Amino acid sequence: MTVEKSAVSLWLSRSSRIILLLSWALCLAFACLVWQAGIARADGSVTYEQRNYAVQIQRDGTIQVNEHWQVQFSGGPFHHAFLALYLAKTSGIIFGQVTGDGVTNQQVSETTDASGNPMVRVAWDYPETSDATRTFDIPYTVQGALGIGASQAWLDWHYLDGGSETSFPVNAAEVRVTLPAATDAQQLTVNTSDSDGALQ
View 1: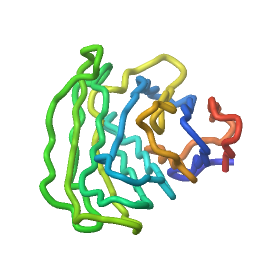
View 2: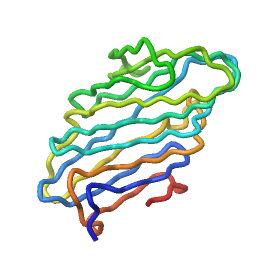
View 3: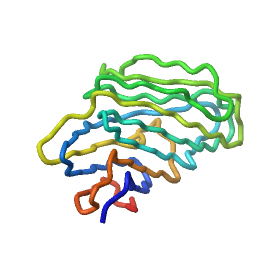
View 4: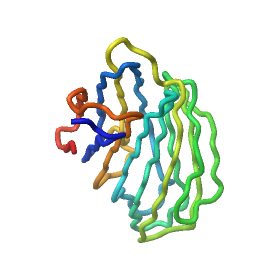
C-alpha cells in the first residue's frame, strides 16, 4: 500500500512526542523541537478544547506547521497569547501571520528560556474575553532542521507543553504529518511517548 502525499495522523491526549521513520531514496533527518505556549493569566481558567497540528515536510527540506487552537476562557478577562519555539538544531524559524478571533498587535522577537537557551516567540493581542471560546491559527516555517541520511529519514517532534506548571489543560489534540511524496506504508514507523494516543 502506498500513502499518497500524506496521511499519518495521531490523536494525543497530553504532552507527547512522536518519531516518524521513513526510508526514501533521498533521506531526510529532522531534529527535535520543544516549545512553549501561553495566554496572559487573569482571574479565571483556560482550557484548550482543541490543539491541532498540520505538519508538512517540503521537498526543499523545510517544515511548514500550522497550529490550530480552540481555547475556552472561563472568568477573565483575557487578552494576550504567545507561542515560543526553541531554535536549537535549526537555522531559523519564521512565523507567518497569526489569524483568528480579533488578532492584533502581532510581534515576533528572539528570547531565551530561564537557562539561556535561544527561542523565537510570537505574541498577539485579541479583544478582552471572558467566559467564551476563541480560535487562533499560528503558521510557521522551520528552516535548517533537516539533514540527509543514508537509509532513513526521521521526524522527532515534541508537542504540547510538557506538563509544566504554567501549561493549560488540552482536551484533544491531533497531529497530521504530510510527506513530500507518496510513500509505501510498510516503510513508515510511528512511535509516540503518549500511550493514550491513537494512530490513524
